[in-house]
Image (cartoon, rainbow, N blue to C red):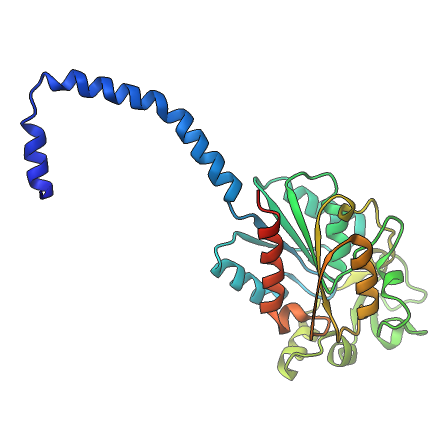
Length: 285
């Protein structure tokens, strides 16, 4: 039967059928709210979480670009936030305030110093179902990023002015002193694995972190109550593999190691994306 035939057939129904049809419609309508609620509840249990990405020091949200594109292609809502890089407590408060504007489940991801930020920002938020650390710090209460990097980090040197440019340049630095990586530090240690052109771009566009942010003690860690995943770069010269593994094991994280340096989110976005999606699936309700 064509649509036109169906329409003509419907128009020939006797008027006496109208009350019956109305009654049936009313009965169905009375059932719809419960059915609709059940359907919505089912959808909410299977809905993909929002993925929130927090960058680290000497970077900005664009460092996540290759990961964002892959997550979006796979149907995830993604937000890559601007991390202020001013103080650990203030940066965490900024991220925490943003997270409170979201509805539904969240997977919170941090790279490098961003790991310390999410560790503090996620505490007490029941919507955050998973934490993902990408070449990142996962501090316990009272620990700082600088201390956790350990003596084997390329940034742990007797004279900080050999790896950092200080703004202002006055010595000794204060908590508010901005730290920029020297170009040589970016090229040899921080951005290993990138092409020469991309390394130069990272060096030119870096955002500084303050001395205070990198040395501020962490608060109560969210990884004590929220499941976590850790992506560890075996060639990381900024946060050495051994330091990352120690933090991940302490947090009870699901660990994935990959052949990458500190900016593995840029050099191997596929692996990073896969782990984020594993966390999303594992914690789906």
